[in-house]
Length: 455
Image 1 (spheres, rainbow, N blue to C red):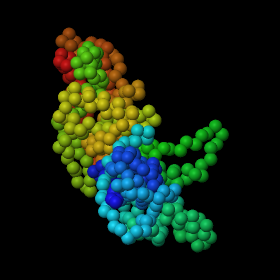
Image 2 (image 1 turned 180 degrees about the vertical axis):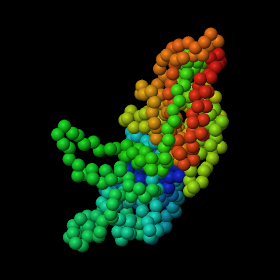
Image 3 (image 1 turned 90 degrees about the vertical axis):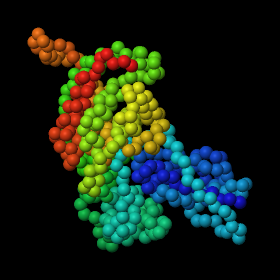
Image 4 (image 1 turned 135 degrees about the vertical axis):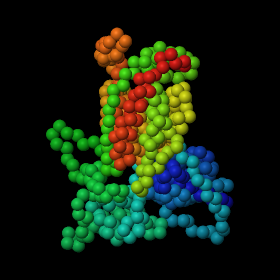
């Protein structure tokens, strides 16, 4: 009889581990090919893991909330009609051998997105870093340690029962419980000061608040709402971005009358010809791509004191979800697409984002982000950089305003379609000249839009 090993799949190029959210099947349960077995979560996306074969689950090696490295065997499935005794508990030890060897085949599962759960924005991943003693701790264990006020030196003393002596959630929770029950005089000294983030060493407001949320009591007329997982990820991502990049924001006002007139005159014909709506987003993206080609040093990232210049243009677009959260799907190689291609990409990603049907790779590897705050009726914004990018453009609402125009007969006041554009950029590598020139160039392309352009 064959035993097939279910491997924790790689969810993205830079993702090295995932958290098990729940097991949908237990030991002894029969599964069909492509039937979902468990749900997992990374810092970027939640997914369901289907069975690669038909058989019976013979062993489950990790429990709910365990953080598992990519490539690790998480379960075994017996095939060829082998009988397996059902067990209500999650198995953590291999069953005793009956004296006959069984071939084992390792198969990496193929993840599928979880439609019912929100996805995390294209974000800076929380790295699980080794401690001062070079001991590995997962993000889950580190977060618990921070919430309980454990210093790194104290965490190093916690005995681990995981692979290679790794500290699991159950290990640290058992330690915390024993620690709480111990007399005050015998407890290890808590770490001093505010909690420290693993990546920057700076106090993390989100983690500090999370550590005290259990002690919060609602006052008169108040209601305590627990942040969902995605909101916590967004909060961590935004705080990390502010800690990482010194933000500067520049503004310009663009006269987009020609662009608005062209869209109003051609949107029905565009929809009839290409079966796609033409919104302002792809028109703005087209101008952004042209400006990036003119100023390629805006399309970079920073790592270890070095500037990484991207010779490809992947435009992220901030999209609101029904839950109120945001996600940033990415249009890859946007400089290779014409306006029709950009419109198709924008509409497809936006629709699937709202239905929670994006794939993990569709929210990764952006090099520049555009957010349209005008959809909320806002005239301008100061967006936070989507790390590890170095700039993000916000487009405000288009409004009719009186403006002074120069003509051959002198200056006149006319009603024009005006829009504010704002660019937040990382002042470590983007100075005012580059940031301001790039933003002005985007506005120039929008203002110079050809009213006679053919669809």
